Length: 440
Image (cartoon, rainbow, N blue to C red; front, top):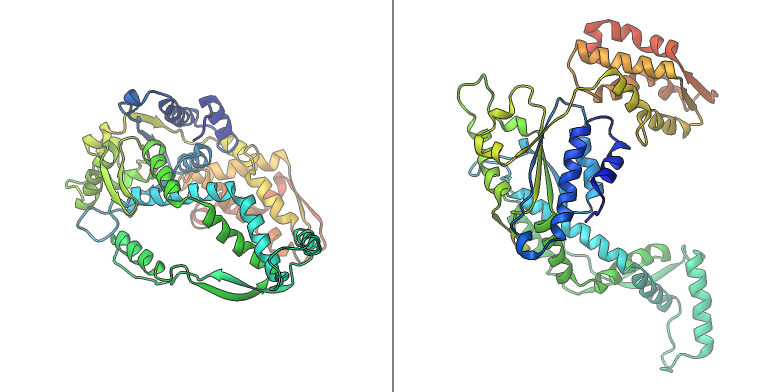
């Protein structure tokens, strides 16, 4: 897992997310505490449970983006789920225990990729040897390789590495692909279908099939096959499961959608049921998966919600108690919009410049155009529904619609976007509240 300090984590998040310092600090401390816990003695380590976080803030201010970026920084099993996808046990739909099963699958995939990278060089050498055996079959009469054969093999190996033989067709033996059986099952029965599918895939066993293909394709297939032989599958799975139990992080988005609303007299059965099902998972329980029993005591849960129509106090008290750290994210200001357009790595303006550059059209955004775009986005948010930074995507698409449509046809090589251009394209829409409600 990541050994970054909280300051380094916040610095990395600052490259992609504008503002929201308190939320960044909270997730940075939570992530660092995972590392701190792993440095402790085993006796005290088991006693320290993660302090789960509840992020509260309007839509489009960076809650989900913080989760996305955190997943890349964590170097630990990480899963983002929507609370609205789950139903109470006994109802049609996915139950919350599938969160842990999905987290296990994510961890297995992550550790398998790591192991594949670790053995990639050995797998590549073995794959090259098998391709060379197909290109230069050894003579049947002699058991020993002559120096002449060895030098010929080295010449061909050099050609193979330089890509000179990529288009040559060879016949090789590959492990037969597992039998693909698509099983349709009702929601909530995913575990059963997974077990049935793995049972069918094991039927083919170690059968091999002879196939004709280009050298370049054969190398890729053989490298994967050789890497799979070099990986200790059982050990890799044990490491992955241990990582889930000790370092796993689950981000539950839209938690406010399963809270009962203040203005409604009775609670929706399924909504409150989902909250009650989440309780043992967050507090610490044991979940059955196809890889064995998984303890959730040390998995960190980060929940987030806009809480437009409900309040955090509308969550059932037990769930509130299991999310002790509260972080409030602020609504974005016009100045934040300006910074979002230009400051982050691969900012919106950079993305559009790169896209148009593929057509040979260079876009140039002047400072007054950035000010005007930010102002229009903020104004439309104030007048209609406030969707935060997502409004910038809508405004930018509308602003560059003509340029995007004609970029491949015209001989124009540059386009300067200033305040006047922005006004020409957007002022009518931004000024008319009815139009902006439907178009922006």
